[in-house]
Image 1: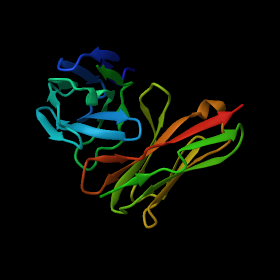
Image 2: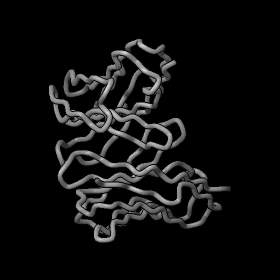
Image 3: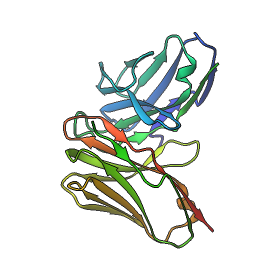
Length: 115
Length: 112
């Protein structure tokens, strides 16, 4: 029972490099999310997708792009990485959409370091 | 703007003790509140979801209560075990948005 799967689990980048974090869920959920978690800042929403082809900016979207490829997959792209993007990134999904999303289920996280 | 606070930031108790974790929020217009557990280096695991119309939810040794009018939720853990050691986070959803606002968590250590 995989749930929410994120890849890669660890990544080190140099400033200016680009990369894509992949996320897939096998629970037939409608909504998917990308969060970042930083010490002292808690969890902050980067982007949200209520369905395939739709995305919405969260609290901290600058420097990121997302793509909801299909119902299962939601990717997060850093076009030109900056040290401020060093963080742990979590993908999450939930069955519902809009206000009534229901429980959120999280992946194991992707630890990104930008030098 | 909704703010979610969890106090204390850290808590250490001996095994077997019953304990309460606190979560406060500033705007009572919430849709639901969710409690999560996070183990070091891991993702968040959902523990309990309480809808705004509910007063409490129970799962095994866990009981979460919600008092919207006072802006408070508590997570009660009965007969604590070393395996309960983790960070516990609460998150609140406003009744007009999909967004969850997270507290910064309480780090719990249960000593054998």
